[in-house]
Amino acid sequence: MFKKTLGLLKPNFKPIILFDLLVKVLLVTLVVPVAWGVFVLSLKVVGIDYIGNDTLGTYLKSPSTWVVAVVVILLAAVFNYIEISGIVTAIHKSKAQSRVTVGKLMGSAVMSAKKMILSRNFGMIFVLLLLLPLTQALPVTGIVSTLTLPEFISDFIKANTILVVLLSVAILALTILAIRWIFVFNRFS
Image 1 (cartoon, rainbow, N blue to C red):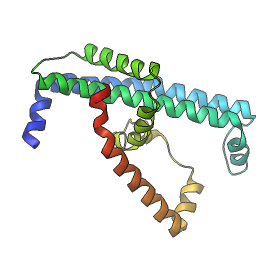
Image 2 (cartoon, helix red, strand yellow; image 1 turned 90 degrees about the vertical axis):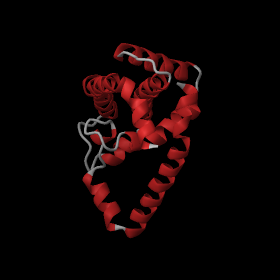
Image 3 (cartoon, helix red, strand yellow; image 1 turned 120 degrees about the horizontal axis):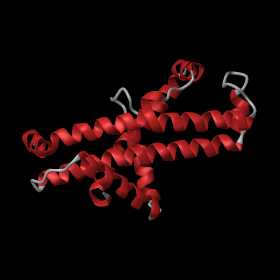
Image 4 (cartoon, rainbow, N blue to C red; image 1 turned 60 degrees about the horizontal axis):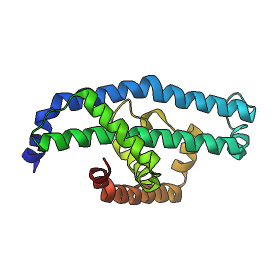
């Protein structure tokens, strides 16, 4: 199985690596600054300059906060889809013993994401949201690696054994669900 997998990667290994690097560069130079700008805008709309213990409640009660959260999460999901779709395309080309360029991978991935959005495939977006932490957990430049819980929230969770257990069960359940659906990308990309 391992040799077969390596065999699928070998014909287009260089384009896959370059595509992934390009995606990471775009993430750092475009997506993260746009998401940050939207977040800062949401702070201004609510009328606060920062989020702290005294302003968190005000921020979370604002409807604009939830609109911004949905926009940022959808942006992350679409960007994640572009990344996965490009890699799946390269593997399909490798299976057919065909070579592919980074430009063609990017074009194919963007068109696939556009098709997903235009067809209103909200089920795929849900699957992407489940896969997002799994696909972005290891890379240093991943979307999830730039997000952290405020320290007082993570300390509160760590201090309560029940919350730690519930969070662990939820993460495990979502991981199992996401892994079951990971192969749907072959159908939609």
